[in-house]
Image (cartoon, rainbow, N blue to C red; front, top):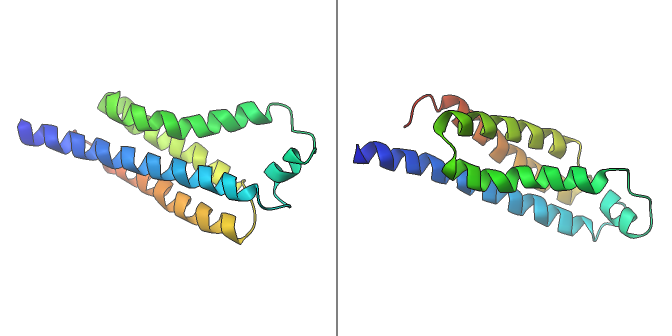
Length: 129
């Protein structure tokens, strides 16, 4: 029983670590985009009109990764498994439709690898191992 509990905690820890890693990468990519005069974020800061609901959509997107840090620890196995897959897919779409420039592609590549890893681990997570 103790060994099974350790395996559950280990799997939760992997998901938590991956989500923290992804959120930090996304936040830092956004910070760097503030220095890129051609980035949409910088253009908005310079007075370009923000699309309606842009801040709401951006906050919801970032919150998916942040909330999965907590949910990976507290949700039951089956719900956590499917939420990891669902939110990873949403974040993949956002990364694919995100910024531009070589700095962004570096962050996007690393984020994509981590998100795909979350999906693979979730799909393979068939029991409470």
